[in-house]
Length: 354
Image (tube, rainbow, N blue to C red; front, side, top):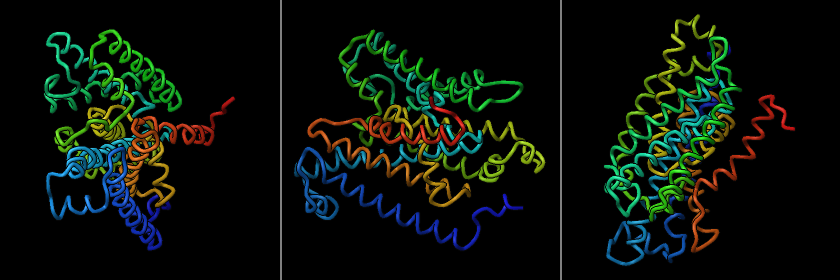
């Protein structure tokens, strides 16, 4: 059966290993350039000394306290968004599936912003997204429940004749996401506090001001979601085919689809809780990964994670470099890349743009 022998030959394995090696090298180079390029001057010698001869110089403080943490966080959130999109596209068999388009990111954002500003109204603070607002370990949980509620609403809007209509799901996600984003902005403007500016930057999807304190709460979610994804590789591979085929192979389609969606929500919500809603990463990366190495799920997860990490690190580098000393949020960079690709996917999916 062809569906069981997809991309298992030696040529495919060779292409996979070459792709992983090339992406890994490119990611390392991107991390290097992200440390030496920016508004403040840092040279190659400073970067070398950071590892081999640590000192208290201004350049090393910039690397250790500012650029290195945001680059590492960028890698993690990029991988999170990419795998979240891959899981959604696989189990829903919808090329338009993406945490942003389906309202998952907006739901997570609304939950986080509403919680922070509600607590701020009770106990005023001068910071944003720190333990002074909400203990930082709780933020991913708040984002997860907000994203979960948004996912439920999108499914409810797209339910038709006992099943999910992919096109209605995409439209419902866009509409619901727009409503929730408007609600977030209304909350920010309505409170009108000093932290509103930082909240707006966060809503644009930004690594600005991120530190290792933001990375620590993300790591448990990365570990749990990766382990959970690897544990359901076989069901994931089968879910990409027609429901009748999956059921004939003894798979409980509804159960495993729901499990995969929950994992996807976990990936996306935890990433949103750290950097805000970065759009289109989960939409375009799985398609690029399939172009590189085909459709075997385990390999797609690895390549998608590397591509997602690379996109965020490079996007953040571009955002910090094009308008020095100003900074363009990473969400704006990914949207500029993602919108044209989204339109191409719409066309190939049979939707006529008039």
